[in-house]
Length: 596
Image (cartoon, rainbow, N blue to C red; front, side):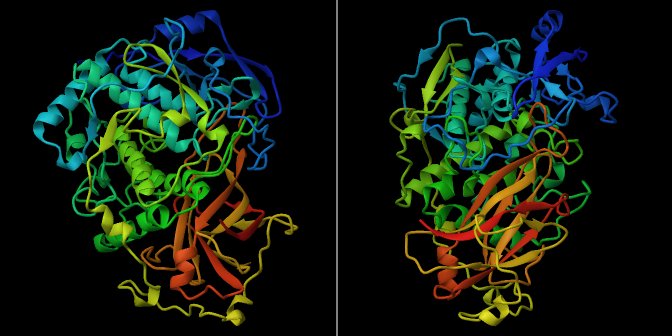
């Protein structure tokens, strides 16, 4: 199977003023549209801005849409939105637009092919149960079958919705503002940074898996999951994906992070692509266990885990703990730092071009099952349950699906996960105060009631009470936040109305009771409560200064109890920016403690 060497089709875009959120409307000329539809490629790579120094060997061999854009865009609406109390509108296939992938004049056509038949409604799967197993434990027979399925998928015509190219485009168009919401042309559709993150990706993997199985005539075929939470064998990029020349190999990865390098679930992108991680393997191992505990096991609140609600007219809610990390950290870990936007795994538009993506997200999806097994419950909000998406199935039919039908994966979708006893390592984990860990550093941490030290740092109130936003950048920031008396199943630290650059790799760790925290501070301590990540992502009309506004919530109840801070009237909170964009300023309007 040889990749077709196709020249780039440069398509000029005409645009005119549209609306405050998306200032520019794009119109593709008839000839350009014909050329774009004719373009075919089986080689997953990425587009390059004209005049770029990107090596020719990795220039995209598919249609590239380039045009100069006037004006800018900012997702500056309040995270709670001007919502209309209706489900987010389903995607507008007929008004799909080119995805802005890197800057104001680099676009790619991710839109799906025209359906051959009328849209059908989802019906529960009646096939046999499929069991997803850990990628590091599958046998050679399975690996052969898996490669055969992807070889057949790559061999399909590029305008076939089941083809690898079109499957990769599904993530691109849903995640890079290719769609507007049906019935609300002013609102784009984004399935990250909100409560749609988990159910949308579940549907995506479901149909991807069904297509692969149908191509090899095996109704029992199931995707493997990359078991990165398992520190005893699973926390490496699986060997089956590292075999060059196979249909599941992708050259656009960070090969420096291949085994023996352990997956760092707290990974931050570096300025120098050749830089080596300075954390010893044992610290990465312990930090990974702590990250899994802090972002999955201890989180009881639905919004804190899934992400904040989005409804019709509002396209930006707030990231859930699982999405922030480990999910996003693993994306950045796998993407190539040599590529301009972290392609493939490290950017929304290109992530689906790496077969490893689907194995990564299978484990993200598995975390949903694990979280529920701990006694937690899904949203029951009608707007959540009735949100609709569109996917092509294994028969090339366009299917309308609802979130509510994805919740019961065993009954309606007919798949399950192999039991992993190693989950108990991070589920049962309980962090110790830093001074009692193997990675202790000299600190003068607070003790219960130590208000004198708290007084050394500025008090940040809720956004309605703060006159000016708090600026973060160029080093750790320590503030105090009032902790009112309260009792609930979870206690959340909420950073309100956080404004971050959409093109920035914004990443920071959050500590309580540890003002001395810095980039080297271990995450395997009770003072660490979570991390925030932003993958650069883009939308038509944006500029280098375009931003998004969101809330960031961190579950802190067990940490507060372990540190003996239940009765403290103030908490000392330290934000530690990390990664290559750590000096780029972001702001938040306020901070508060919420009992939920």
